[in-house]
Length: 115
Image (cartoon, rainbow, N blue to C red; front, side, top):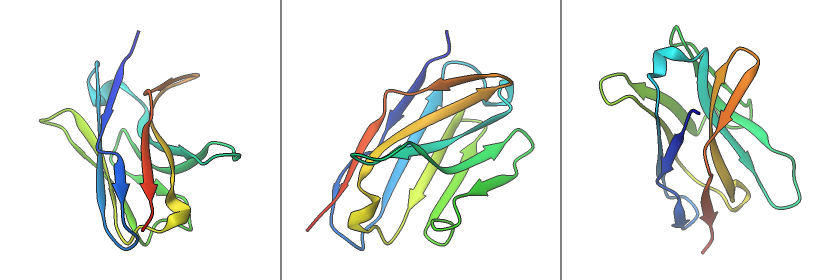
């Protein structure tokens, strides 16, 4: 069973930044893609950003200007750099790893943007 360990969530004021990390129990290259989703209270889970096996990235259009997904092969970790955070970014952020028809999820890390 693939495990994804997330870290980096917390409480931050509007306009500040956070860096989320996710380390899988398997090698990053074993997956078709890895990325981040988020789910706000009362809302469906939505894609934030992901990075494919070949390094190409995909973003939710509304977030690409402020969020950056990246990976460190040596550390076997993916990251989500979130800048200029807004209250509407408040959500549980989930790390995702895709392997064909199978998706694996982290436990989620809560990001709260509030003054």
